[in-house]
Image (cartoon, rainbow, N blue to C red; front, side, top):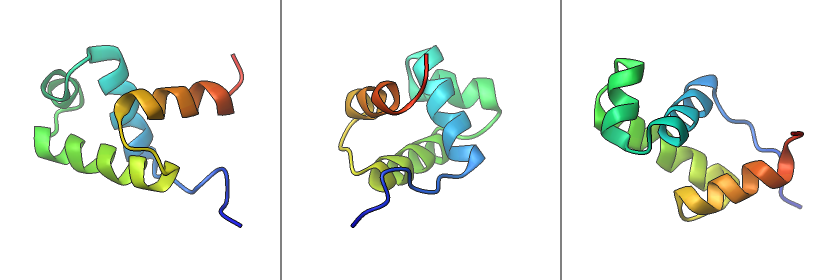
Length: 68
């Protein structure tokens, strides 16, 4: 059975949170002082670990698996 809470790096979580706040990969990259491609790679890796296909699905997953 797949672990419902996969091991994700703090960088992946920070990138995802920045994208959620900023709205775009470019703005998130600027906020984190990273390249847009690095943020895209972190997000892609996170989506794979969560077994979701999009930012929207990842946000739904996060809302369902975290406390308010």
